[in-house]
Length: 415
Image 1 (cartoon, rainbow, N blue to C red):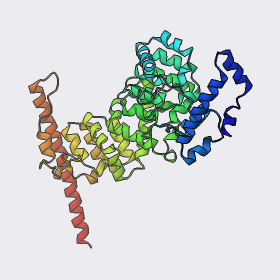
Image 2: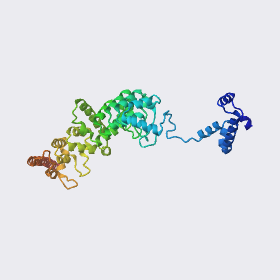
Image 3: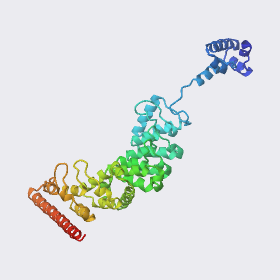
Image 4: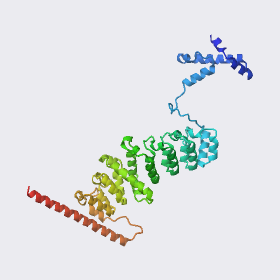
């Protein structure tokens, strides 16, 4: 039976073998021997899959396919081509040099814009696209050319960190590339990476001030709302932890200053909904102390209006000093005035001590860091004036408290 099956070779194949000078009978013999060796080497389960085959090549291919090892991205029909190491390394060098002619030449033979570099060397291990590589290499013009020929779907390809080309450009701070990508595909603004950070959050986390403001103006507000996940909270967290407000508030450019104010307003709206523990974990408390130290009264005003609890319920974790004491220590007169006027009835700062047993007068008496250029006489005069102002401030507090105490005793006498 098997011998008969082996000889059932289509006539067209016989003609092709004769054209190439191959004897069909010899081929049949070699095929029969190979097929027999394959079948007697198989177990019962594997044999059932190839028993009807009459070609050793087909049987071998069927066995190879059934035992193929799954790839890391099995289940994803990417259709991507893979470079060999030598070709990939050469391509990387061309990209880093900005050799657009060499890349263009490769373009003519491969759809490179949809190729994923799967080489396992250190430079290629994250399966970046060519656009990712061009962005990392700082090749703006080459990146623009790649963007121009890529479809929206190809622009949304993510590497192993989950970053699209826009996310990579946001981390890099490449404003021109970011604008080019956003103009072509605004959906990229809403695609998070593996850490659930959208491009706006990534730009903020990597301290790219101007780019953050641009992405904020382009990102849909709906994506920052609580119903869409934690994107708004993550933005708040990065802004506060990286003290971005201290850079935005005195910003010089009028247009960007307006965007910065909108950004601050949005963040303060987010703060108004946070509980005490969330205020601490988000970095809001730490950031507020930092803005007090730097003297940014505008932010202190906005944050206190959004959530007064942040002003009165928290202390500097290092020294256990409240915000008014912190303002006095850093010679921020206007902020100290504002905090006192905010709610004078809650001021007990002058009679509390920190972890180092210092009260308000101790901190006022400490010398501030010398100014530049340093003039010892002028600094001493300034320190003396500051101490007198703080002393007068404490007198006002003591007088107020004495008046309240007298009123309380007067009311109790009639009870």
